[in-house]
Image 1 (tube, rainbow, N blue to C red):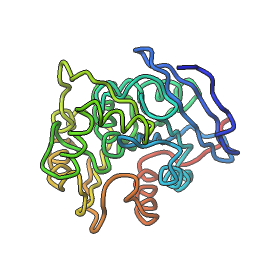
Image 2: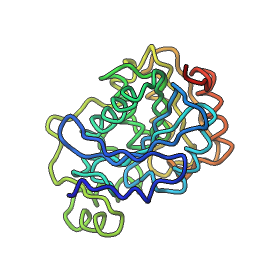
Image 3: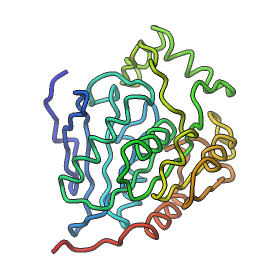
Amino acid sequence: MSDAIDHSIAQPGENRFWLTTSDGVGIDAVLLRGSLPRTTVVVLANGFTGTYRSPHTRAIAQGLLPVGDVMTFDFRGHHGSGGRSTVGNAEIHDLEAVVERLRELGYTHIATLGFSMGAAVAIRHAAIFGGISAVVSVSGPSRWYYRGSRSMRLLTFGVGRSFGRAFLRRFRKVRVTDQRWNPTPAEPREVAGEVSPAPLLVVHGDSDSYFPVSHATAIHDAARQPKDLWIVRGMGHAERAVDPELVVRLRDWLGERLPGPEQAE
């Protein structure tokens, strides 16, 4: 696809970037900046089919700006980014491309906050690459190939068949690979302990229709200190289920673990 970027999408206070991953995939990203230069930034990693264009993602990003600047992006195969989605495997390279660019821009404290697929990516990325100041997993799976819920059975059925991938491509602007994982990556619960010494917050709703609460407790149990677990009553799944009250709680948790906004010298 073309490397051309439509800069009209970015709003005032936003900077749009076209990044390239270590395996050559183009990533469409937008950085939201506060009024003063800062060295702290939070990266939002959407769930499968999610996009930084979503009003839910934008609302979360705006709510976190008191903590630091906020980088949002589309995973490979999603909307304006290149390549094809691998549904959580190669996506760690997308997140690393974002983190590398932020370091080049002078950010020294980088937190990652992932939702669903993005939560699994954030945990694996921090465990493999390191250098992250804090990690938040919201509605994340603890293991692969889970089919214990109707939502996950439908999702697995869709991405595993050509007509399902065609539907996603046409109606959700998501292009999914037809290649199986080989080898299968380590599961989030297997690598959660490697996130330390960065603090890890695991957030899950008790009304999640994709993954039951046991996924959150499995990740939390496998992680080392410092770690926290929030089971949110009545909360559903991922970005769409994050209400303003939870955004404030996330902001406060991150604010306690990251340096406050400061003016660059």
